[in-house]
Image (tube, rainbow, N blue to C red; front, side, top):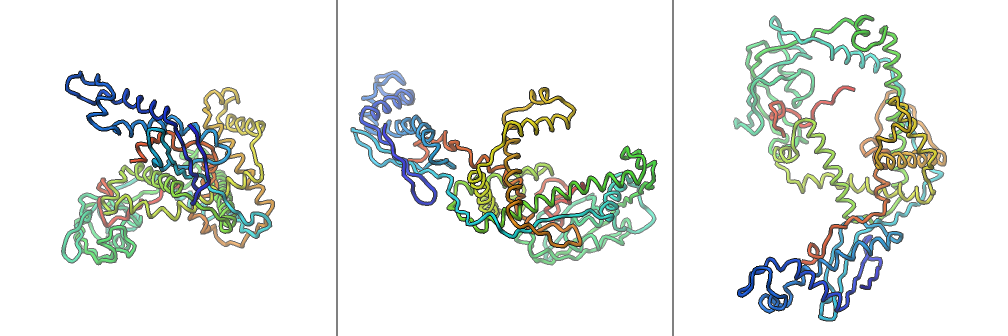
Length: 495
């Protein structure tokens, strides 16, 4: 077999594989041996008919497809391995037959590869840095959540519904007098003020008395997920079955010691502020790294293959699917409820996927240009740090580690060194912030998360090892979420 590689358009490489007559004949023989059991020929036991007899009955090309598969699958990976220093495959090849005769076969594979990135500048720029300081109000809010988690639910019978109560309700929703899917439930527990239902619903339940029925008039938001309900006025017939209120514990040293282990309220406040500040510092660092990355990526160009974008979309969709699983939902049920196809759902992620891939490519390119590596000493120090955090010796901790953990540690060290270098070589400025406001950059994947896949993007591995020539030549289930009145995103859990 002889082959050539040539750069093609849109970050692809054209690989031409030429097989002589002997190789082509041998492949057809292999195909015959592999598939002869499928043929039932008169005068022969099944699978025992000679090759030339099968070809005479079914045609000369009866074994061509399988033979082409064999030639491609036996040689493609070897070609990719021999050229791993020239290009990195990032998707499945598109294979076609250029020529086929008794004297030989020529196959052509168009392979998507990791593109070159042109970065106009990454040093000497003015880039925003973020810094957040935890306030006493945030500490108080954390303590309020602690009290709320330890509150007792008590039946309420002598007053109307109040904000914060858990109201057990029956409801039936209609639009223009007609019921709609997901707009009906019985015995639904709704925490008033949680924002679980569409705007205006919970406010109108507040003030109702047990046993009372009333019509709740609301309007679905213009950006509501269900197309048939966007902007529509709806009426919900609501009956209040029962109420539960919260009996909060008293905030004192005894309660704090029992609930948290701290000796006093003041000691717990200090620990809480320290914990929250560490979280704020992490958010600030992530936001700063995003700011750096977005500034550099704005001046970067790359011809990204669709295969890389689709792979990133796969990752984003999978993350969303995991989030649904934690809520007891399946992605397909969610899409069916919204009447959205998988293809349309994936399109929603395309812009974000392109941005993430470009960020990964930029990071990979900068690591390469700056020749940043993790030394064995640095890896050992990180492992020792992790071991100490779980009260184990380094050697004992290593026994429970697999190679992927070492790869992650190396990647984390490299990424940290990269951003340390970028911070040192750019003019970082901090804007005055009165509140701990999350920056716009947080709308994208954080730099650390984005860069965690940069190593795999740069890794020179064949993405199409199982590809064969044959392939290329030829809402909610629970009662709580059944309600269309309820928002599709669940309330955030408390930290």
